[in-house]
Amino acid sequence: MPEFIVANEAMLRTGSFAALFVLIACSEWCWPRRVLAFSRPRRWQNHLCLAVINTLLMRILFPMAAVGAALLAQDAGWGLFTVLGTPDAIAIPVAFLLLDVVVYGQHRAMHALPLLWRVHRVHHADLDLDITSGLRFHPIEMILSMAIKVAVVFLVGAPVLAVLIFEIVLNGTSLFNHANLRLAGPVDRVIRWIVVTPDMHRVHHSVSLNESNSNFGFNLPWWDHIFHSYRAVPSAGHEQMCLGLSTLRDVDDCTGLVAMLVLPFRRITDRF
Image (tube, rainbow, N blue to C red; front, top):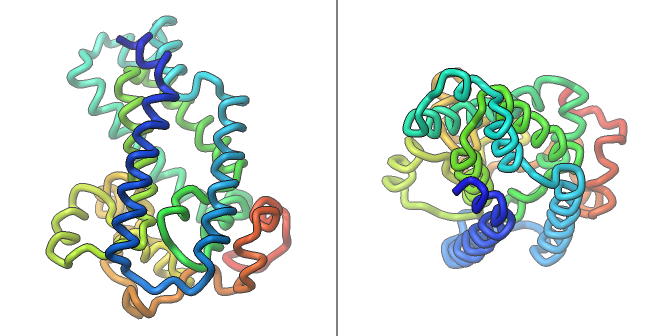
């Protein structure tokens, strides 16, 4: 079973990603939350190009990805779960939770440490927010994120199935919680106890530092409650709130592919 997962990891992840992308994109087209202020074709083109660059780079630098790292750890007998002989029924959900809280912690660090913020601000410089914003990450951030996940997988001996499920869910929730999608109030209030919703995560993309320093979760919303970083709504309301960075408002600086790639190396006074 693990060998089958590794052999078909790319197909499983790509297939699930494509299906979710089409579903969520169609949904936000039918039920938009906000009126987008800038050109959708230009943003989509450059965000998708950035995603392709990241995918190719990840395949070159991490050909096994986190799933392959889990198989390697399993074969080598590495990791806490392997040493303790933890059954999969326990190891799989615990590994998922550990990976998720690590991603939450990594996200908070990206906002707290100046060097990491320079990379992460590429994601926050988007002046609109929709499904493709969930693909807008600088290659350096993608490399750091994968390296951290691989380290966690080795350390705990995460089961292969747990890692595959986590990677698929993380990709899917990144698309979902960045979507310009209107959910009925009662539906959103229920769902956000289980998974981060678009309204919950949109607060995190506010130009206000108080609001962008909240709602760091990608998959599970529980960490924001536990670590006191949860904010229910933006002060200006979802339709009127301003997205992006207050000191970077030019559409060419925020949307162009080359501009996104060089942004970490520019001297811009924003958060620090």
